[in-house]
Amino acid sequence: MSSLFTKIIAKEIPAYIIAEDDNFISFLDINPVSLGHCLVVPKAEIDYVFEIDDDLFSGLFLFAKKIGVAIKQAVPCVKVGITVSGLEVPHAHIHLVPINSVADITFDNVKLTVSNEELDKYCTLIKSKL
Image 1 (cartoon, rainbow, N blue to C red):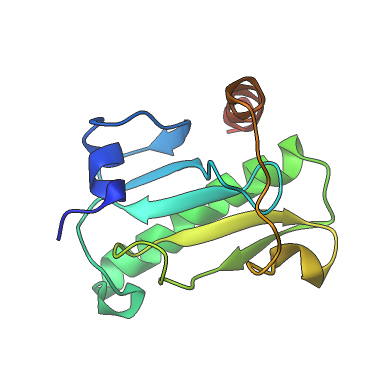
Image 2: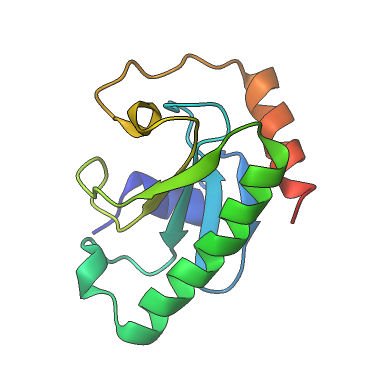
């Protein structure tokens, strides 16, 4: 089950990587619902989040917590929302979205068009808070 995320993990395609370790990777969503919107992905090719074994599942959310704290410090927002919808890409992933209201995390909203320069800026800013 190779996906777009598999190619990012393998560094076959570029991404604005925030952090990674042996099991997980986080990178900016290039079609964000708000600036600073990150994805957190297990490196193992697992489609459905509830098919992840317990240890990896716990690790995924602990890794996401570190990224969420960094986003909150780097991006002006009330909170960092978290959602797992799992329909966009057939690879389990978590969305971390800077929000000021519940409406900010609605994926029906128009996605932002963000320049490479702005993505680079937010990538650097969030990484500096880790």
